[in-house]
Amino acid sequence: MSVPPVTVVRSRDNALAKDLRRLAQDSTAYRRQARVWLEGDHLCRAALARGLRPALAVFSESFWPLAPVEWAQAATKTIVLADALFAEVSALESPAAMGYVLELPAPGAPDPLAPSVVLDRVQDAGNVGSILRSAAAFGFTQVLALKGTAALWSPKVLRAGMGAHFGLRLVEGLDVPDLDALQVPLLVTHVHGGASLHRAALPWPCAWVLGHEGQGVCEALLARAHQRIRIAQPGGEESLNVAAAAAICLHASAAARA
Image (cartoon, rainbow, N blue to C red; front, top):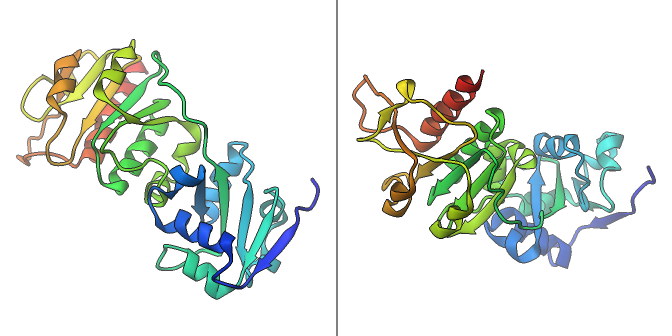
């Protein structure tokens, strides 16, 4: 692999530094720039493991001489930022010493036959990232996000997803009628009604629908549900965190296939 060109940037007024700051700190900047920012070696290694080649590799000036060759030569271009500037770009309390910029995958239409997770206005970035991790772990290959859901490629969701993004088909900005194209049954989590999860016959493939943290799944999706599923809570809590509910339901589907 040829050694990519290296540019050293020390000015906070540099246009590239400004773009990186927006990508790292603005949850929807990736939509305008059609690029995403991955900060830290874990996310960067996860992208490389999936065969992705970043457009930019970004290193702090002090770390650059220590960077492993496979990281330093992974991108088509390398940027070295002064340490203070890297810290200013980063949105982390303890900034990492490296990051990658990836081209945003081109948006596509939902795969009608894919085992899927549907997010109905799930707003917390940590919840969304955790659900993506569960989807990837339990064999669900597609995540469909309705309008009002946290931005799937935002820095916070990327960090919470821990690399799950790179193994999933992600489609966001959907309206409820867009889901009518799915040819797999919709299973809707519901607190007060429906079949108990541990007794239900779970179809495969299917699409699990997870709803807003406070309001749950909207009526339009409830009306489209093939099954309403309830998670038994003998401890008496009113409801589960949506990410916890997702992990339980997706695991149940995976276990039913075993």
